[in-house]
Length: 168
Image (cartoon, rainbow, N blue to C red; front, side, top):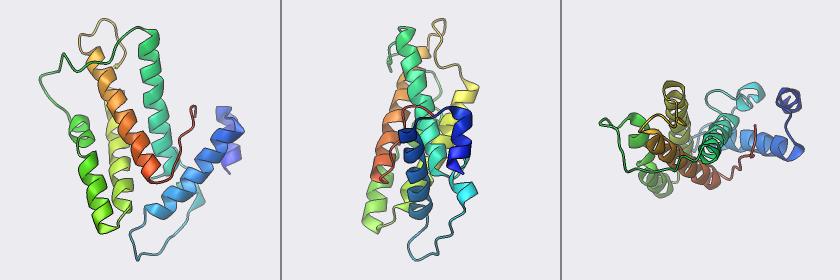
C-alpha cells in the first residue's frame, strides 16, 4: 500500500522504509498503556491527521522552508517579534514539559498526541503565513519559528524511534 502511494511522490526506497516503519511505530506508541492496539493500515499511512507519516511530512515541509530561506538569504532570527505570540509558539515551548510528564508517567502516547497537535498547528501557520518573504519584516522571525518547530518535531520523533526522510 505504501509503495502505491510512494509512486505518486517519486520517493527513494530508504524514504519509503522510513515512512512505513514510522507508520507502524506511531500506530503502536499512540495507544495508551493498557489499551488494545488496533492497526488500520489506511489510517496509519495517511499523510493527513493522526499518523506517523503526517508528522514526518510536517517535519519535511518545515525543513524545506528553512532550506528555501537559506537560498533566499533570509537568516532565522527572533530579533523582530510580532506583537502577538500565537499558538504555535506557545506549543513549542511546552515540549520539555510534555516529555518530562510522559517519562514520569510511562506514557509515550502523550508525546504522540503533542506532536500531532503541534504538526497540525504548524500546518495551519504555514497555510496562513508566507514564511519566506524578503519584503516582510517578520520573515526572519517566521523562519526561526519554523526552525524551532523542526528541532522539536525531529527530537520528538527521535524519542518515539521514528526517523523522517529528507523528501516526501
